[in-house]
Length: 353
Ligand code: NAD
Image (cartoon, rainbow, N blue to C red; front, side, top):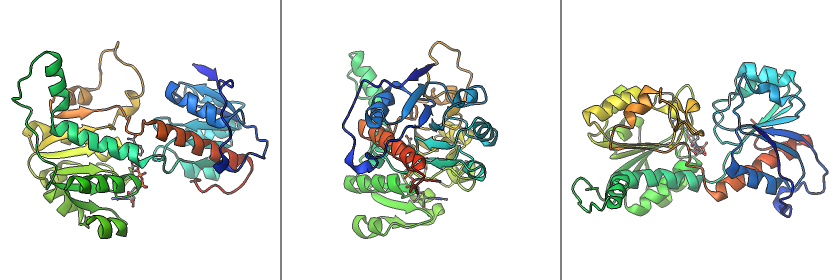
């Protein structure tokens, strides 16, 4: 469904955007747009650009909708591969505005080679994602879902609900960029001993928060909880796979709020079956493209891996919602439209890929 941006909602222009004196008007088609973001995009836009909301994903079947638009805006599961970019270019689209930090799904080199400009939202609320990761840790640890459904059934038995103190546990954080750094700080507050692995060290985490950078093998073998916060790239694809799971502590807790492809789902299912993995918290999933952000409740589930994952009591899955706070969505809207302003006025954009 394609819907025009409701222009009746207005908000004063934000002073920090710095484009208010320019009279810009770009036609932007917002793919994969959801109700929760229409309000923010419309308010922040303040009638500057012509926004059209499409709830469909950008794909081979929907790319034709972009005809007549100067820009398309896309989210994490839109198809922005080489052939789609070529088609967008043929249709006259000049700009691609990502409403995400991650850009592993975009062939931006191809876009650049065709003279198109691509920008992302590098940081919108690291707190949203970091807090969600910690929420998964605590909910799994203290069996919150099971406890709640018991209470709803007037079953106040505590058997099977025993958790562990976070205080004193070893947490291994892979990727200490914007989000991973916040996770490190929160877990330090709990009294965890935080080990970290990153290709770049963050000195503030070492000096102020007592975080210890270690080789990946040491992080795998010594952590009680492992949380992933690095990007998905060729080098990090299946970072969590059989040989690494084998080297982990028995009963380890794994949390992935980063990208599904970091984890080999089949190997993790085997780890859960043997008990090697004691808890699994996922906000992202390897095959999420075909499942997430849509209601499949009336359909027969075809995905065998997710079907198996849902049978484990010690697995907690959310549908890529770690970013979903009011603050984050407003920031995404602001930066996306800031990027559009930069492109339209042909100036340098710090968020350009
Ligand atoms: P960031 O770029 O600030 O940090 C990423 C960190 O990973 C950097 O410090 C980088 O040096 C490090 N890194 C790069 N290669 C590495 C490697 N091979 N091994 C270990 N570390 C490596 O990104 P961020 O904003 O902190 O986001 C982290 C990830 O979270 C993103 O890549 C994105 O995929 C994901 N994310 C998920 C959601 C969600 O809703 N679930 C929302 C936003 C971001």
